[in-house]
Length: 243
Length: 357
Image 1: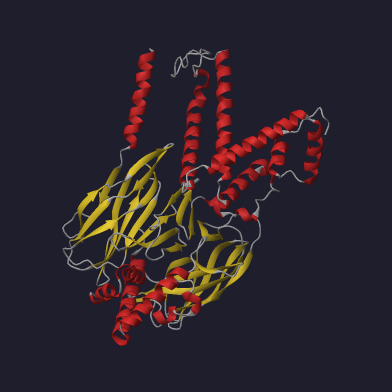
Image 2: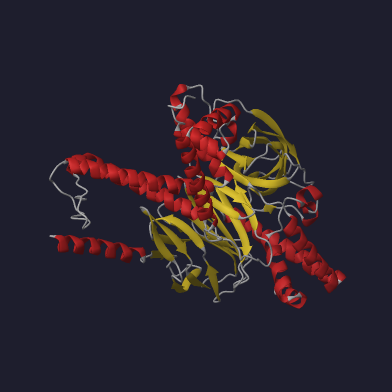
């Protein structure tokens, strides 16, 4: 790798995480030995990664990741829906950041048409949004359960391989069940219904139940938790259904 | 211009915050004079709807008290709880509510959709096994099986107490709790529909657990296996009884690579199976292990059946003592309830409870 060509971002990311592969790892190492700029970038990446890990470790114990994932999914959808609403009016939108240090001049719609400043503003805001999205995505991925990681890997695989090429079948471990809409998941921790990235859990028994709860799955499309209600002593069978 | 725009934005924010706190609940229980259940009290409790993007996350924890306004003792109740996106149900088996008595019903459900939740009565099972309600969830069968299991279990424990005394009952409860702790819980993901992949799976045959007096026998069964996923199970069944069978449930046991077995799912099937005849039960569903591992083997067994005359067959307690079943089939809801009474209140309270029936 000539010194004049710096390490591509993708290779750099793989190098930092130890996923670059042996040959690429050697090449990057050789390049970095003589390239101050790339060394600095690697160091910066390492520090960012460290900070991200620390931030993830500082997240509150017992955080409901499924709920947070559902929240993110919902927000992404809203963003997409908003994008759809905005798209036809693209030429009419002025974000109103007029380059003034005093802040927003206006947050409303304007019929003034495109201006050069408007393009610059949009570019700046897009860059900020992309940065925030990247940080959030990284934090989210670091905390993904392995099953969801599989799904994400499947999606990325499909994205890069192209669904219409025919030769790229999904890895078998990803399975087809994710491709068929809603699924119910059952484990010793309880029952979840997943639909379009949203997870809804049946209630859990008390953290230290009098007797263990029982988890059941019914093939027509439901899963249940059965537990003793601490207050009433009643047996409660709580079920969720695949729509 | 600027102050008015600011005012507008503030108004929108205020409206959003106000809507975040509004949860609309529709308790749609029968109101006719023959309805066996009436609402005595309802409040939303600490239920809340929180905006999540374009939808709402609804934590639904209302306080609900119902009255048995019919003339028969109630054994089981099921409520359907749903919003636009999510359908859930709450069933309470092992009840014993006399006519005129009230009882609490705890709903503790998370929904995701809009902040408008409908609660409807789906079914009530009475002491004489008669049923009231639309049964849109097809739970009448399960509610009846729970009640029959409860009767069988109470009879067993009462007999044990009479014949062998309190210490034997205590030992049986300790044994039950140990079993509940040991039963392997499913760890699966289930989807409806068949696999659409072009990749070829392999057919795997089911092994069968035969229960001696089961009215139906499994004579064949297989599913398509893709590593850790089993797809589209189908069974050949044969009615060995002298009565037509109209419904049955098959227990589906999976064994993973580590040799761990668990009851992965049940397959209910409506059918019309005359005595001596055979039929086929298929299900468009797939089960996948969560995490890594491949399916090593599968077993099936008939877990219950309903005859055309409305009577039921359930396995006896002795049959459920079979080591293979004991390891995967959890105790009945009633056994769960009785063991919790023993654990919380002791042997005397358990004996008092058994005397009520």
